[in-house]
Image 1 (tube, rainbow, N blue to C red):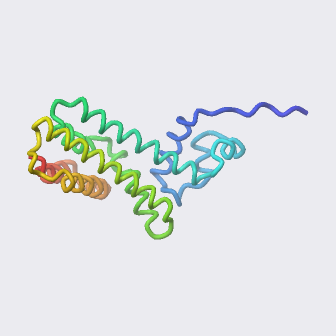
Image 2: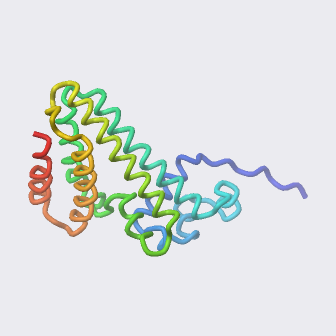
Image 3: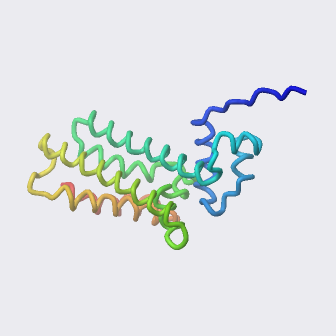
Length: 195
C-alpha cells in the first residue's frame, strides 16, 4: 500500500488562525486540539509543519503578528508628512477597533503577563518584541525631530519609553471595558508629551 503524498499548508494562513486562538485563550489555555481544529489540520500535519509543537507555533505566531505591527508603524512614520500626528493616530486607532478586538488586548503584553511566573523563555520573547516596539517609537521620534515636528530638546529615549508604557497601559485598561470617550481622553492626555 502506497502512502499518499503529505499535504503542504500555507504557513502564513496557519499562523493567522493559530494567532486568533492564542489571543483568545493564551498560551496555557490553548490546547493542541484547539489549534488543530482552528487550523483545520490533523495531528500528523501539525507536527510535520511545526516540529516544536505548540511552543514553536506560539513563538512563530507572536513574531509574525508583531512583525506586521512594527512594519505598519515604521512604514507609516516614513510616509507621514507629520510623524507626530501619525503616532497620535496610531494610538487613537486602538480604540476605534471593534469591541471584540479591543478586548483581546496586546498580544505581546498578554504574553508577558501570562508568562511572568512560569515561562521565562516566552517572557523573554515578549520583552524583546516590546523593546523592539519601543525602538520603532524612538526612530519615529527622531524622524519627527529631523522634520521639525518635535522639539529637539525633548528626550526621544524618555518619550519612547513613555509611549511604550502608554501602549501597555491602554491595552490593559481597554480590557476593563472602559468607554471609548474615556479611553480617548486618557490617550490624548498622555500624548500631550508630544506637543
